[in-house]
Image 1 (spheres, rainbow, N blue to C red):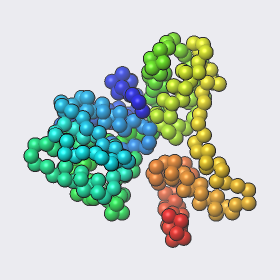
Image 2 (tube, rainbow, N blue to C red):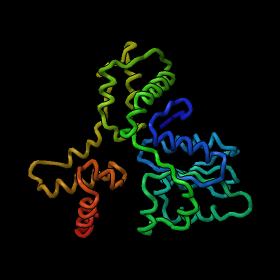
Image 3 (spheres, rainbow, N blue to C red):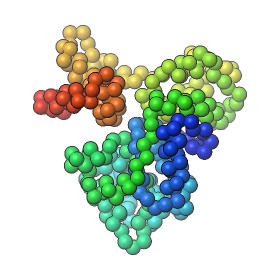
Length: 280
């Protein structure tokens, strides 16, 4: 998300309220934090919020998906925000471990984000166990937007106001039908997707009222529909649906199993079958 103010938003969801309170409690410490959650829930926004509440003099940002050219030698104390830590390759993990082990007073405070459970990556030997223990002293998990029903209207109102400010507009309101359309969507892209939908609605608004026709959702994955065709075997359809649902949930097996309406055990067995067949 481009901007999300945790102070300006009234939070009613119990889990999210607890996350915010724990964030405030830990902001002034040097504890290494790991923020978990699906894509678009606001992990980076929460990390930056924690930084603003700390006494840290400077913020460095490392994107593990695009870490080429990052100069670790320039880090001198402050806070290091590590985005998508689960995407860190072995070389990057080694560099981070060197940074963690600094003893000359230039070691930063670490706040990391991840879409995947790093413990499972450690078990699969895809992530260094010693680095995990250093960077994940405290875990903060942000719930999906779909699970924050009590906060939904407050979030909509907040993002609608932010979008109006961005485009120099004011006084725009959603009709009951427009809000109902928003409320009926399952938001696979979480708050980032909601932000995008409302921003587009503000841009397209021709009057003070935003109707349901201005609430436009992107296809979850247009390529997904093209992957299915008449004549395919049911087992092939099942396999593609499972793999694409996993992709949609950023490899979150629990969430994928829920969306597919199957048990996590069934999903695990299916994936083992695909692995043996050389699909994975």
